[in-house]
Length: 135
Image 1 (spheres, rainbow, N blue to C red):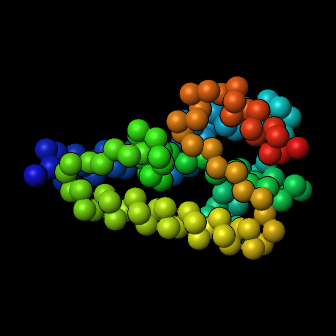
Image 2 (image 1 turned 180 degrees about the vertical axis):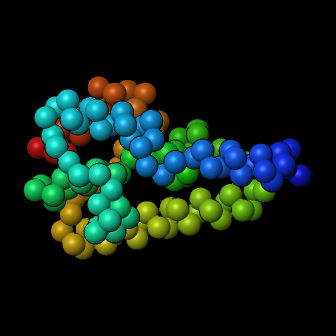
């Protein structure tokens, strides 16, 4: 099946997808900050440039989009019909990269917590998990 968009339109759509400062990430940042926790953002010195870094606690938080990181939820299991092979390979590589980064961080003595985009539908539960993780 061919793409319904022209290459220029597809490029414009893809350029709007951000790696940092996404809506889910901003939601988690506001939650944590409101609770009094302070953090660094996207520390390039650490594997995977975690979204939130708590150096004194040696803890990091990743905020993953369900589609991009192939979560087990409905959004994460959606498979595009167009160019399916490309998307499958891209998403699988994201999953592999995530595992590598988490392993490297663990070997360096960091504790890791992942917040999935779909979990943010229940912010009170996420906040409870995060405060437990950070305490």
